[in-house]
Image (cartoon, rainbow, N blue to C red; front, side, top):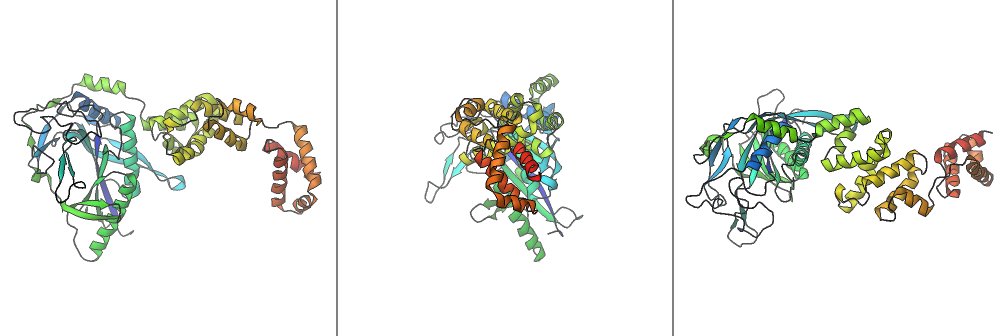
Length: 483
């Protein structure tokens, strides 16, 4: 595999968060009965004219500013001509030579731990276009149905340079892009409903050689499928070349059941679409004051927040990246720190990323659905920090809060008598009892067996019903065993 370099570029279709379509007033709501949300414009009836949706343009501006791109003061809509049953006009309105967003980049974190690194993926462009309808095959024997509800749905097609060199980098980029479009409020990111779909352009080459022939894997709607599809396609292309066959440029589909890609059609080049400016739409002019207003309305962006978390709270790059995976997670974390205090930022991060995340994942919940509020978790972490409870007891308190057994950590601690024993005299008495009752373990420890010490600690904690301060138990036990 080291004899080959993988080259990947990604095209993403993000459905924009407008309530109506890009060139008509028809609804974009998901789940309506077929063909109930397609108006005369979407059906391409004679004499109808498109009218551009201002909200869709504003979404494009927000995205361009978020990635540091140039928002074009003038862009042009073009007709992309091709025949498909769910495309009533016989062409799609898109942008070609003059897109609304030009350039920009997204920096992503790839991997974790010692192998983690940052990768900057450069973007070529992002352009506005309308979606086509949908062909339905499952419900019709020997024929296809056409649902035009999606026809005219506003999309932002986001195109990268061929900068990625592995499926891991491609997935890291797709995840970061998915988080960003949700963060700035231009797309709900719902991959199951088709709001965020990726096409991966994949080729292989010998290191230093010109780019190989690419094949485009269409309509990948999960990060797992994106990785599996790229990995299969890469190995397939390498095998083909090593067996003396040339790669043909093509559009392929990924079959999740078999884990394989299969050819759909030979790939069209731009000239095959006979692009020309749409005569029904004037050029899109975006004045500087509109761009400035949108810039002023942007929230703190993920990368900015990530860098602030590192600087302000002393978090690692990995922790900061995890905590800025979505606005909801970042806001929850900051609210926890607001209660527990900045000095406890690292324990706050651990509780949000590990204990809370594990419980949410187990029950299939989003962080906004957590039964434990940020204020409750912050209060719990405060009680660990001031030695009211130990980490082990804290897990019991968390469980009680999750199950609604108290309004706060303090209430659960008092109700269940979980306050940690920190009285040195009380702990010393327990230690003396355990030493007297376990002469065998004492002898083993003094003979150099460390495991025997752990057994004695366990006996003290058992006698204290888990409520003794572990640090004090360790210190007093060592002191008395050394005496």
